[in-house]
Length: 115
Length: 116
Image 1 (spheres, rainbow over the protein chains, first blue to last red):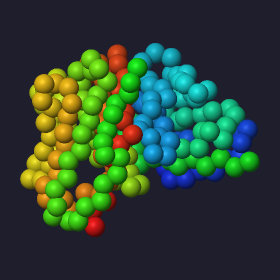
Image 2: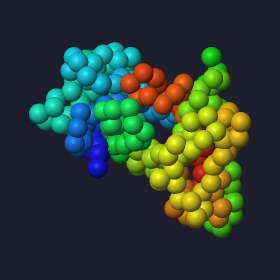
Image 3: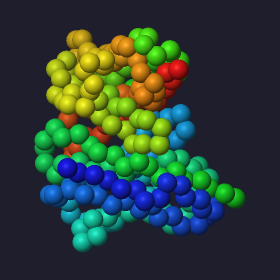
């Protein structure tokens, strides 16, 4: 069964500093991988997704993520964090085919940004 | 473009009572999802509709939860009777069709349910 691990429950970074949020997945075949952001009181918004091809994926709001098959990881990065990036971030894995298997989400990482 | 609308935003009920949540997806979106997000956890899919048919309800506790999507547009999720462990945020999402690769699911703001 597919699973997602986000090792960091809470991360605090200074505004302007770089950010890396970790995500490890378990899936038997080539997965589809996603990063979502959830601001307080809001629904989830898709930041980026990986299906195939270039392992470095660019997303919205200046985020990027790198798929590393050998490490079963899909870490999210941003070179310079803004105070508005404070939110909950979820990594998710889906089946690498057109099936109806639902996405499996990690437990999330809460990002705090300090001045 | 209007987003996914959900109501109510908040609901507090006593255990063993009933509750219903409503979702209006983005116009033209054939696929509709209901997720349960317990505090400190990621969202978990409860049920997925394609138009007015159920595609996946394998994680829906059918002894107490029910959902319908009449006419393939709005959807209602009901809990009867509620238990303390049902306290969570219930998220509705919709997409043009069900394809992780070719479309994106848009989420509503959710309904926060507290069962006391």
